[in-house]
Image (spheres, rainbow, N blue to C red):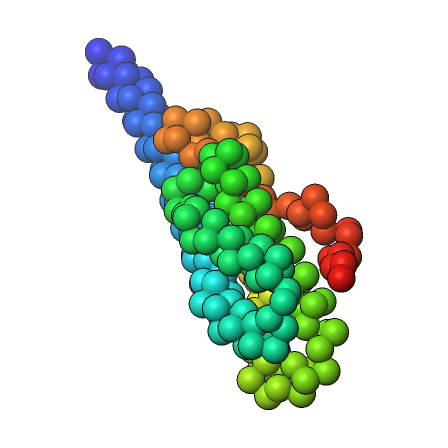
Length: 201
């Protein structure tokens, strides 16, 4: 009788230890996924921060260029419309798994980048504008912001890659599927990224 109890208790102890080990593993994987997801959200905040900086600089840049090159209405209109479109499209960290929302956001930002490139090309044709200290400062800030955006997008893509790889690896894919972790979207090069801006007079 005692031998039977010992065997039963041993089996129960082994089952309990296995259950504790599996639960501990699941909690560890879940916590890692939470950490990676928060890393994606933090990286996204940095991208948004740089986009907001650019968004805030544009009115000053347009006003400065407009004062000198007042007949370039098409370019100013394109920049103003692109900025308005960017202002209307918001993408929260929770929407980073939605490919359609992400693509709309990226298209709006790429449209603004393209319009700003055309504006800077137009400005090269005005010597008095190139000598304007305010314009030069704004141009330097805008170029610096574009560089920061590029760096933050690269960092964002790296963090997203780490996250996406983790949720697809076995056996973490099981925990990710059960707890609702979804793949995040990457920034991709704009369709027109290989083309230089064209301005015709």
